[in-house]
Length: 237
Image (cartoon, rainbow, N blue to C red; front, side, top):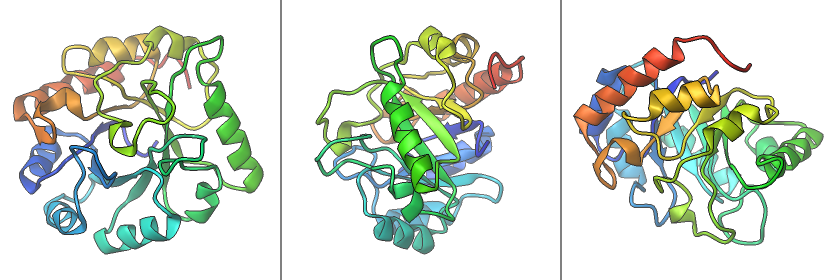
């Protein structure tokens, strides 16, 4: 388990300090073009400079070539990488299974999206099977809300849409540890953890006063409620 509570889309040193002080154990730095939470290298440097030891620094990318991800990781001292692009397709915001091999040696998180149907994670299972056949799989999974095929890179996350928590609980696990994302707020995170059985959570828009600006009170409340819920008995591995 790379993290238990991650606050994503941190865009300033002040917000990074709020997240760290709240007790979250990971922050997400968004490098996805077009996102309202996207930052550049210089902003990233300013943020990581204030992040205390023990708080995981996760770089979020969508469709970015592995060589560029590695370059950013080295420049900023990222602790882990999150692939947030589409699972399949021909567009620019796709992270194919081979990306795992290309990024071998880096702690890797894969965002997947709940779909409709008998197995809402069927597409993710195919992606993981292909990755395993190539020789490498992610260390952790973030299950997020569904988006339409062809959705641009900047609109793949932070939508505020929620996952069907009961459906996630009933779905066969993918293998790696699962974090729940998708519309989580201080008000619903405890219920989401209990219903879904997830053992980690990830939020961005749910703790903001405006896109890319964290609300200190919401951050603290989210972390406190999430920590209490995660301390309960696990419903699934």
